[in-house]
Length: 233
Image (cartoon, rainbow, N blue to C red):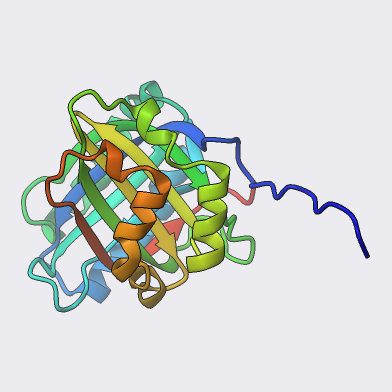
């Protein structure tokens, strides 16, 4: 039948959901599988208490088994505002303190303003469970005058639809810290997350992101990970 196809819509506002994310880097010294079991229990205790946390709430990336820093991991937790991110710090610190015997030193945490693109809602997974995914964490040096608003313009509805349709993107968070752009993405598995790597330059060019970068090398790390959602909303 003829007619004009309806414009595709995404399950979030144009430009993503404005948010502030805590980006936490930490090292663990116990066996990875044992550590994940303890982390799952900590998530079940802490996430329900986090005021202003978005859902999906956090993405947790572990390194690829062949990576140099095999015991280093990253957690990105998204909140409605910087005030919420800062306001939950004591609860989060208490959670890390309960796991101090499993950690190497103190977790390093920063709060970064940005936007979240929750394409998937993970409706068939239980709230507060660790949902297996593949995850990337990338840092992209920007020109000195580039703002968060400039960077966010690269992630148009058309761009996000392309990333979902071509690569199977499930979730993305983007932010700017100083002169560094940060992009974290989630796919169904580590292999799917690695698939865009050979084409990442072409993708960044089509998005307009290359014009914002200062020419320095960028870094995109891929590994297995988990998503956590606070509720089924």
